Image (cartoon, rainbow, N blue to C red; front, side):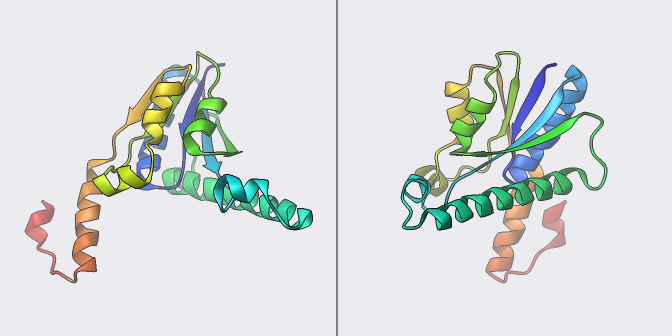
Length: 173
């Protein structure tokens, strides 16, 4: 059975990608796989070195559990109590988001769906683009979903709230 693999982080952009992936799964009569990538605190150094092996095993188990909880919360936020009319599977994978998604979607018949997210200059400098990584390294087709137009309105309103500027309702139309 063909698979639609979608990267999920819980962000608004990933929820938009999750909705698009569900629509693609319905059209293609495919399974929907929601994948959340997680990393150990401290990155690779945190996963390689630990003063106590039992503390390391406990930290890995706690990170895995937290990732599973975040994935369930993201699915609930995207679909509410009802699920889409497709088979939905979830997976948490330890690794950087781009590499984890590319490793998970190894079948050339898969479709990998990722959100492009908001990419301001500072964010580009600090965080690599997961969508660009997937488009460069994946063996299957990649669908990069742009953020919802509502995200720009949300960001504008959020910035106004940070600066305590009054909101003019005419600007929302």
